Image (cartoon, rainbow over all chains, first blue to last red):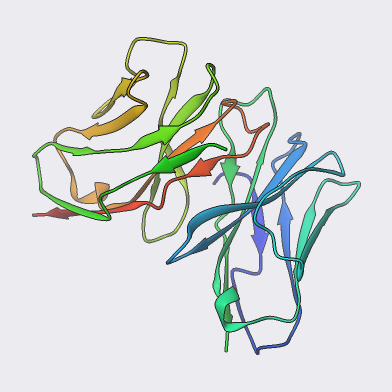
Length: 112
Length: 116
């Protein structure tokens, strides 16, 4: 168990809908990262939050947004969903004191 | 921008044999970290081994070792005495730090099959 909790584990939704993925980082970790894993693109960095503030942005679509709350949990919001958004979404947490970043078990999103 | 390339999408190895997974990367930084992650069917991302760029000595973790060639920007993973449980996707990754205070840049992954 990495200590990073992601919910839900699986999500099936229709095109055009909006979903929210949730991540609880390891206790004490200030950084939360979101990654998207798809068959054709591999694992791509989406966005990083550090202690409530956006720290770095990757290939995140404008239809996607994220935030980190005062208790350090984070949510990734995906809207106007398309079939191509079907992927595994990982959250990871970390801090400069860690020796590695810790990954959650991912949320499998299927858009039908 | 940093990039990580894994040119072999799939490999197979016989149980108890040795296999080497290749990875190349590109960066203009002099200090950085390289990682190999394993993703079994459970889809959990598991850190296998890490290498600090400033260390010339290659990292080893039990049956796993790396061949780090900084000048060539090459970072291969050797798995010795392959076991059925080694079957998984393997991802090479790069980061400016080791501890999760910077993002990871991943290669596209390689599927390893272990044949009994």
